[in-house]
Length: 255
Image (cartoon, rainbow, N blue to C red; front, side):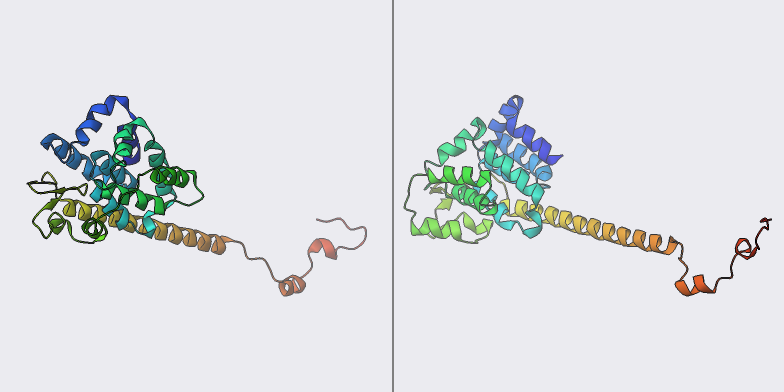
């Protein structure tokens, strides 16, 4: 259900206003409220939440979500949804995102999120080739040591906003000296914990279902084995007395 709603949000022309509002999630109160409202439901699907973050331009959080995925999350369903997203990135809906790739120094987290998705795709898939080709068009840029340190660090969100000089780093990785609230009041650390908890519940539910199906199959086979009629052994067949029809003499009729 969440995947279907996410696809409608990304493709429906009637929802272009909502998409524009989501792009203001880090700027306006209305955009923030919409983002948080959708997040509670969208976090039931890793691919849906990544799509929402790319749409809302919360690229740092998108990168964190990608890196938080574990082996159980990257299944066939996930790869199918990822394939759809990669193709959607080439549509007019994400034209702003492709244009932002012209400024790799400004949108470090966007690059990191997209490269993270690239690493999850099978190399022989069409989606891998599409995304790799797109990333190859990004103009070369020499990142400063501070930018690389921030982009590759595991610093918690509560500390990520501040550099040693007192400047702040916004969600998209841009440095600001006078930015009072770069995240527009959104606690992305709590959101990531919420996402992890929901995904853990889904993993436990899937594991329980698998064990239940295995137990049910084993029980069914055991019942079938017990209900099968026992075939007499060869020794029992030989020791069985002949029937009356076999004992009658010549010319005698069977009674």
